[in-house]
Amino acid sequence: MGTRTRTVPQAAFLAGCAVGQVVKSILLQGDCGPPCLFLTSGGVQFASATAAVLATKPPRRAGADQIRRVTGFASGDVGRIGHLTALPVWMDPDLPSHSTVWAAAGAPRHTVGLPPPDLLPLTMTRVAMFTQDEP
Image 1 (cartoon, rainbow, N blue to C red):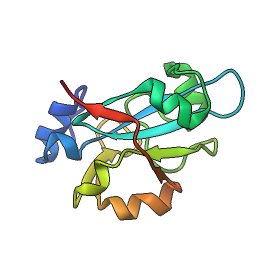
Image 2 (cartoon, rainbow, N blue to C red; image 1 turned 60 degrees about the horizontal axis):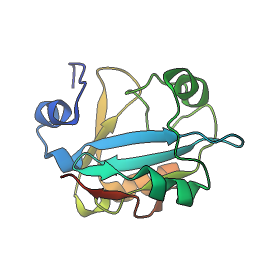
Image 3 (cartoon, rainbow, N blue to C red; image 1 turned 60 degrees about the vertical axis):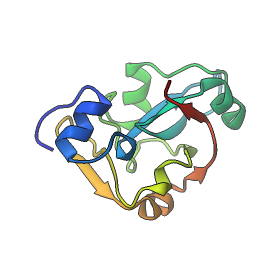
């Protein structure tokens, strides 16, 4: 992209894609063990209680310092691969319904567009339901 984005609609506009094609990443941190990364479509709402059951962690989002320490990326710039720590990763089923999705690529002004099937083996992602439609 070239311009830093702060919202999903802004990222979709700059990428020239639908809001649902933007990949959001949410890191849940528990009291022990590694955090878990959840990749969601920009068009759905993250259901933290459901995600916590999958991850067997309390529904607590990691803070900016924890995100950088675990992934090596700043909050909002978390790339989908190349984390400092091996993380369990889940993807919501809406993302594979798109031919191309757009995700942060590790820097404030970089994104990558790729087919969801290419993302799955790169991140060893499991597809699971942990979202709900936006109101």
